[in-house]
Length: 466
Ligand SMILES: Cc1cc2nc3c(=O)[nH]c(=O)nc-3n(C[C@H](O)[C@H](O)[C@H](O)COP(=O)(O)OP(=O)(O)OC[C@H]3O[C@@H](n4cnc5c(N)ncnc54)[C@H](O)[C@@H]3O)c2cc1C
Image (tube, rainbow, N blue to C red; front, side, top):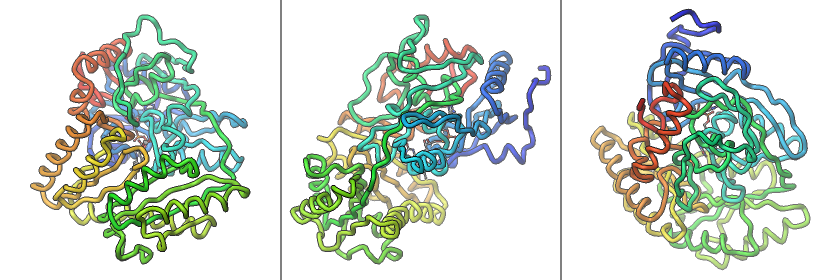
């Protein structure tokens, strides 16, 4: 093979920093490229296609599923595609490697809101969040990333550059991906798109490299207050969730659950947790100066009418109290990370969402888990993260057995494998169980058509097959 006409890095010391992600999956690669422009991305991808070099797109590696972890070949990092290109009142355009949190902060300083808010927003890239159709707490009100993306520029696996918005048709000779997604929050598999843009959102870097995106903005809410509500039991908490979702007086933008193990994990650090609390719900409500008092009263009335430990409720509406509530909330994942480090074993996490009717059964199944665990997450979307915390290799095996039982239960209820983290490499073996072999074949037919040497994201979502 001749020397490529662009810079590649082969220093193992540099490469070492790019070989794993937040799931601790480890991979290997021979070279790294860090293009600064779409033209450079195109040249790299065309070169790899011509020479059949596997190419994995890596952004900030916060993936929890091994998506950016290479199984050999080269890595294309988006880190130098880091420019915000344009901001208007209604839209913003940026390169894919821009950090999501910093981008959002810049927009909010101008009174505009780009709502998708993965918990990792300060550590992940705009392009990575679009490639995974990421969600966050605010998804309950605003939906996932998909509806907020207006257009992308993408480099196809042949090196061809395309612009796609929702009026761009999928070329007639491309094999179609037609299947019915479950009616729940989902980020599993290729989207059954009827336009080119939607095909590239949530494709996890297997159909093309997103080089820049234009996103839609809305008005930043004038004010937001938070409420932390404590419950003496899970049923009391779930009854409140249902009431809040049905209420005409309340319009939460998120409803986040913490089970008793989550609270136990941080009790020592968080004196505000009442001794009788077995579950907690953290909610945010947008408001204006004019509506805030009435909305706070409506929340208080709903809490007092429920089975909550009403007197212990924490409201926060000023910077100091909001920061305190946020610190309580962040103590839970930090506590999980500490426990994982102490155990010296990976955690095993669920990312299932189920329809409303299946929430109680699913919660009961999560809570019946005998291994050490914590359960928290987006209860408003029936999407909880059960984090199993095995202490020994035998428990790790047991944890995966529990994961598989829960997955079967979620599927039987009409749920999804992944509501927000994607399939990546770790969940690939379980995708066919949800979508069926014919849909996998349809995904593979499109992939093969666009990527004849199957170079891009090899091992992610689909097994390598040419
Ligand atoms: C602490 C923590 C909290 C998290 N919270 C959430 C959450 O609340 N909601 C949520 O949805 N996810 C969450 N995640 C998962 C992860 O942050 C998101 O999926 C994020 O969007 C990935 O962005 P990234 O820049 O790190 O991409 P990477 O992890 O580097 O890549 C992710 C995938 O996208 C592909 N990719 C990346 N950039 C591009 C591109 N420009 N073009 C094509 N393909 C590309 C990669 O090949 C890979 O398959 C969390 C992760 C962590 C570690």
